[in-house]
Length: 389
Image (cartoon, rainbow, N blue to C red; front, side, top):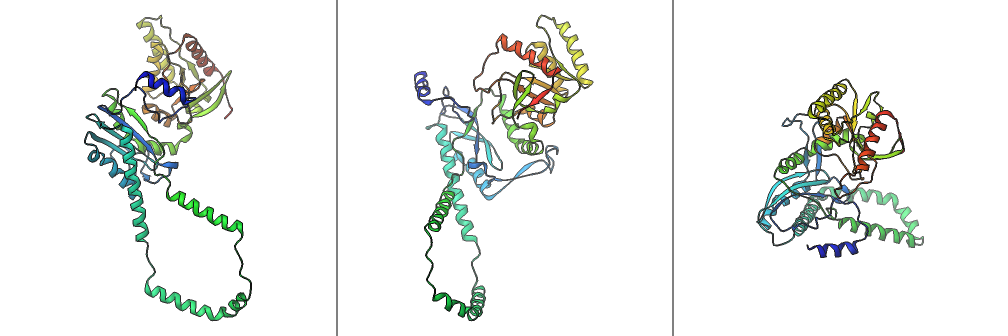
């Protein structure tokens, strides 16, 4: 898409809203590239299966978290694995089914004759057909009344007839009741609702795609898919540490964030401040002191801007010490921690905070923001929060 076409689209698009399903305007979705695709069940219904296992079981063990697929889940997985038969230019690299969504990795080895979005639309259509077939099979498989059961029912009705004949005679002399307009409208509404449910789409509109930028990312993608069931179990175990929160007031600022807010109540918190003017030996000495305090239970707080601050916060994180990080980009309702940040939040040793709104574009820190974030770290290390959520 040319810059003129992109500008024309933006002119009529209205206000830009945060979305995980927006395409990259500058990318050709027919070219040779690798993608990670995420699709959600419409309404996030758990139609594909259920999660079983132990969130903290070792990898490869019998209790490692995994998904037990339903018949529909197996059918959808089969459709994904069959994409190559429709588009030989595509190699299916991986798929991870989840109860209410799925992830998959596709490798477009040769230029596609259509946009990748049409490939995904065709996959959805195939899944919809499979869903209808399963419904029809379920209806056909329902047990029908046997002849013996029918005879028993007839005999029972015959016995009841003699007892109720007098009552029926009286009822026959009464005026037959006519359904009210309200009752008729209610019945029509129920029928309309049933028809809508029958035609309810399997997948939500759109999909999320990630484009592989460097080959090193592929391993991270594969690990992400493989660990998805474990992360889901961890989310269910400690949702308060893994979901975004808003309206956390500390001093003069209001923060959004993700992580363990109990870290703000620890008796010892210290802001990490390391000047860029220090030489290597001086940075090493200061970093050693910070890490010694962290080992003794002090929670380190920093935006990790200077090289020295980044070194200290990374070393503390790698050692498993609790940390509070001030970030420039805020959080939205759909935000979630990724990679090692996820596990650190799940273990309760990380808190990420931001005083600014969430944005999709990468922005460079200004000197004013750097100064503000360092002051916030000092305020957090000394003050108490006032939660307005």
